[in-house]
Length: 262
Image (cartoon, rainbow, N blue to C red; front, side, top):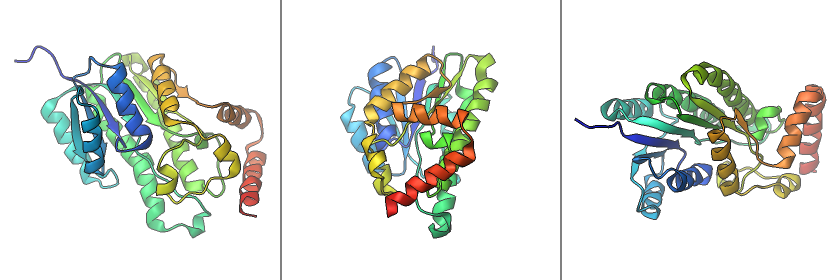
């Protein structure tokens, strides 16, 4: 009989962008973990990550989280190995910009499926394996603070994530488990290219480096913070969303978007 339960981190969206950075920095900051479980659709990208971290035990789960069957695979793996999940990072996400009536229905559904349904499903599956001191990190967005015409579905999905995190944090507080919603502004990753998203000059000006966003997110999670906000501009957006009439802010956002296409 083993004398201990295997301690792991589990990271979704680990093949690129923020998820990949989380795996790299968790390997650096949490050497006591026995394994890091990495989840993404692209096995080849996960295998490259595995090769880059030869001193870290990486377990690859090539799963498409927009497919419900992936949850059964993860559930069976958790039941079989019964690890202690010390860090859960839900970094998988996607999005498309443009007016809602210009977007394909499949794209809208996929955005909600990955950003909301998959995040909640993976969280629910991992809950029995968390223990006091475990941390849950959910990738939301600065878009969660304010509806965005032209980016409506994505912003709504991230508002859903933020609301879920707020409630889950309170539910898990008595168990000593922290939940942190990460709400950055635009980050320099493959996300925009993959979604065919064009950035305004203003957003390009405030592009953040993923390594810095992730480092702050891990530090804020270690402190038990409910929300991790990187960047002065997004902190201003968050304050404005609290203090100013939302309708006026949404109209302003719409005008900025229209100016971008002029």
